[in-house]
Structure formats: C-alpha cells, structure tokens
Image (cartoon, rainbow, N blue to C red; front, side):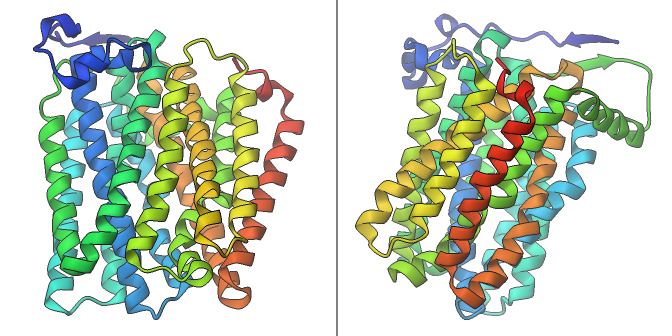
Length: 427
C-alpha cells in the first residue's frame, strides 16, 4: 500500500497575507494556525459547530413547546440525531479513506443546511409537529455522521504529527467558542424572531461553513492499494480497532461518557426549567458558561506540547466530569450553577480533545477515516442511557436523574482504569 498526496501550495504563514489568525500563530498555543489550510478548516469547523450549537438549543426549545416540557421528548430527539452516527459512520469512514474527504465534508454540510432550512419553513408555516422534528433529526444526524470522520481525519492530512495535539485542541477550541456564542445568541434570537427565524439563520451558517471548506487545498489523499468492497473496508476498520489493546481501550473509554456523561447535555433544557426556572435566554447563558470552561480546557491543552501520561489524564478528566455533573445536578441557584458548569465544560473538553488526539496518533494514515468513524459510532450509545435517564427524570425529577448519571460516570471510569493498567500508561 502506498499513499501519495496531491501537490499542495506552501502553507507557511510567511507566504500568506497577514491576518488576525496568522498573527496569533506566532504564539506557541496557536502554532498550527501557521498552516493556511488549517486556518480555513478551523474557520469552517467553528462555523459548523456554531450552527450545531444554535440548532441544539433552538430544537430543544421547540420540542419543549411541542411536547409540553417533557424531558423524555428531549431524549428521543437526541436519539434521532445520535443513532444515525452508529448506523452511518462505518460507511462514512470507509468512504473517507476512498474518496476526497473535502468532498464528503462539503456535501454533508450542504445537506445539513438544506434540512435545517426545511425545518425552518415547517416551523414558520405553523405545521411543524414532533414527528417532523424527529425525521429531520435523523437526516441531520446522518449528514453529521458523514462529515465528522472526514473533518477530523483532514486535520492529520494538513498538520504534521508533531503539531497534531495542538491542531486538534485548537479545532476543539473553535467548537467551544461556538458553544460560548451560539447558545446565547440563539437564546436571545428566539425571543425576537422565534424558533423558525433562528433555524433560518442556522441553515445559512451551515452554508457559509461550506464556502470555507471550499477554500482548502492540498488535502487530497490518493491511496494505491488492492481494491476492496465497501463492506470489506468497513470490516477491515473494525478488525483494526479490535486487534490492538490501545486502540480498543481508547474506543471503550470514549463510550463511557457517551453512556453516562452526555445525558447532562441532553437533559439540560429540562433541568434548567425545572431546577432554575429559566427562559430561553437564561438557558443560552448556561450553555455559554459551559462553553467558556470548555474553551479554557482546549486552549490549555493546546499549549502543552510535551504532556506525558496522557492516558491517565484522560481517566482523571472523565472522573472529574462525573464529580462536576453530580454536584451541578443538585443546585437550585443560578449563581451556584455557573461555576459548576464552567468546571463541567473544562474537564469534558479536556477529555474529548485528548481522546481524539490519542486516537489519531494511534492510527495509520490509511486507516484514520475508519478509526474516526468508529469513534463517531460511539455517539450512538448516547440514547442507550439518555432515553432511560429521560424516563427516570419523568418519574423522580431531572436533577435526581442527572445525579445518578454523574455517579455512574465516576464509578464506571474508575473500574475501567483499575482493570486496564496499560491504558493509564499511554503516553
């Protein structure tokens, strides 16, 4: 097997016109921004995540309106988005290692924009129903399943391995900037232009992200190898993950917070209404504070080129995530909720950035698309517990359901770490 890259233009910042991003690249924390293509990918990713975060809070607010404030309804909507990740991601990963990743990202992002605009039109016309939100959630989730493995694998196509952790952390920092701005912006816009108007804005942001991806050059990866079927490629990717204890452990460790940590993000609108009695703007600010904590976590990680015992850091950050979730679930004061959400955002972002970095570093170039697709498949585990947690929240209240979630996240992570000493020694 042989990999050949198509010719790429010079990527050193000195060859480009000075910009704010290229100026930031002079600092070690932002060194990956020296690479022109990564700057465009970073901007495209931030736009995509901005749309996703605005869509998340707007869709949640619409569902609360359609389903009479039901936390279980929120969980079902999240299930429609995450289940396609499991079903579609293997195909997306195989295609990502076969055809240009840039093309997959453009097509899937455009699809997300179109489907969101359809939801906006349905909402504006007043005919939108809960099942329509579910169907469009499936379509959005399928499009995201196609673009996420390719987008993550493109980072390794663009950035040398020595800067990979910095690049992935900066890419996630863009996501967290969108978590700061997106929810607050959506929460305020809902008041003035209602959910339909915000969906139109979100659809437009998706299309702007497509335009940014189109500016990326030199990322085409041509793979010379014996031709297999798509199913053969999928099978090869799954065997590749299962055959190595490090890669297997990284995927298992990714599944644990999907089962027990992300229930908080799914049920946050119901928790905020139930425990803190907030409106859409207050909910947006809560998500903004969580995004500020997440941004701090990713920027700190971006500045640590020589971080050692990375496996242990992944474990500790996940345990702290559970602790933060446990305490934040029980507060009834907005003032007390803010620092706890900052903490949850910080440790969860640290975990996710470092987890993706280790997966990329432990993947061969020709397998990165499929390896990332397996990582994306773990998102399908979210409804395995978020729907039951939603049902539990209907019975005992959202705060107590999230308390159980946080405790389980701590306990299961500690059990895995004790049973996998090799994982703790990953460098």
